[in-house]
Length: 78
Image (cartoon, rainbow, N blue to C red):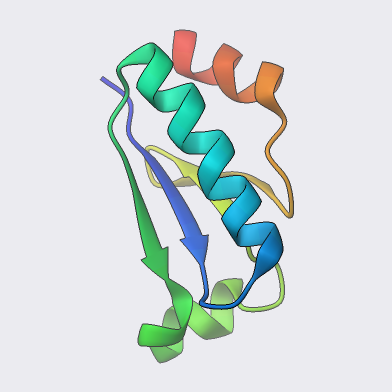
């Protein structure tokens, strides 16, 4: 079973859009997902801060700034 994480931050409109997309796709496929606020951890902020939203699949970076639905669905189908 895959797991998706959206690396996000408060007040980020692109993050809100990505979260909505991931919620819809993952709920449709029955894949667990979560959101992590990069501003809660200095290391996360340093790693992802300029690219949020970042989508991780099974802990590996899948994409950033926007969700590519077909690409994400394909990754979750493997």
